[in-house]
Length: 487
Image (cartoon, rainbow, N blue to C red):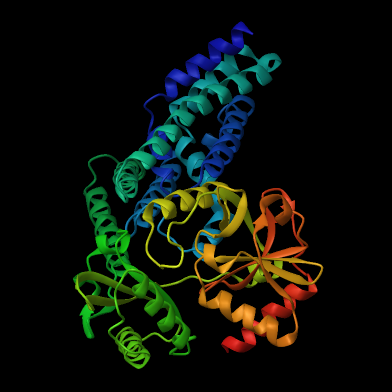
């Protein structure tokens, strides 16, 4: 046991302040904690096994200059992918595709960065000194020391991520990876060509220029070049104050566009008028004028399918306010989501004045954090009496014995999709009951689904640990009816 702790502390001290600690800080801007922990742990165990058992055989088979150049390429690649976006600024499809390879990416980057590093040399030294009889102890102690030191780097990264402005961690990742990339490339080229060789400088200059060009292109592509409509006129998105979209003092509506045409425009216009009426304001534009503004927006942006957000703000008197139309660059549930359903959880919270579609940033931030942390699609709100109301950004329906249940209209946002679903059910003879739904009763449902502008009719596969039937006949019939109505 004494031998184990002696070796572990030596490896821990050797790793403290090493480049891989900084690298893991940078990786927290790109990957989830479990990806980093598992990828790092596997790389640590493999590296130390090679060091202890092979005694540096891998290092003698692969030229050190090649290892350095490969590592430099990996560092520069991660630097380039760190620019051109905010932390976690990815749509779900991109994030899901990256997740498939996240473990491998962390493993490969860590493995290359550590191969031949001083901590591996430390492991080789202990392996030689202690002999094969203690190989397992040396391997376990070296792995524990290296992993413990690098986890500190990861935790620092996540601490910074939660307490720094959006985009800061990506900027930090870019600086760390870029510096490591150029320095490591210089070391590798010096080994290959010889220190002082002018070709090293030329190669470094060429790589730096290419790297800078790639970063510039990524930054340019990440900029929002879209157009908005402000009071009937086309403007650049930069004329729209981003702070306006995160305030709590505006009325808004989200309208889906399919093949260049707004879906259910009459109903959306009516709900806007109702929201404005509830705060003592009349609507000062017709449904036709709203559709014309939407037409100008999608024409200016050359799109045919997206969600449009209409914001009403700047109330300066009776019927005097500004209107803004902007694209949301929406992402929609995947075919797998509609087939397999999506996960949800209950959350105790009450939306104030639910009939007015007004921004509630505090509630949105809290629910978004839960959705992100628990990897959910939606959270289902439960009021102070323990009754289901709605989703954080959707309406919720339950199915039991072929009957559809949803919360009473007076306690929820009267969603356009919700109303269409009720009408379609009534048209084909499906009973819809609008009544208070206690949380414990909801857990006994046969099936459940989310409704909204983007998800349409989306099956729920589970609420917490309670599994639901995503192939329920009534559920699948409602999905088919709604799709037919939309298209």
